[in-house]
Image (cartoon, rainbow, N blue to C red; front, side, top):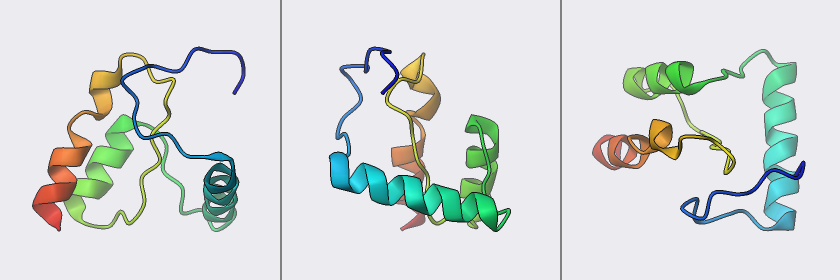
Length: 77
């Protein structure tokens, strides 16, 4: 990380190998112009049912922006 403190409420965190895999996946999505950025775009794609993978940053402040996603994902599955 870049020296910013990780929010202690952000759990679970990805280990080093999974972090590399996630970064590779995000880079591939960016190359294919499939990457959406921000809470609003993530919420839209989740509600439309077109998102398959959402990456949440542990340094997000305030963390409550992404507190709705676990509930929405449980409803969709």
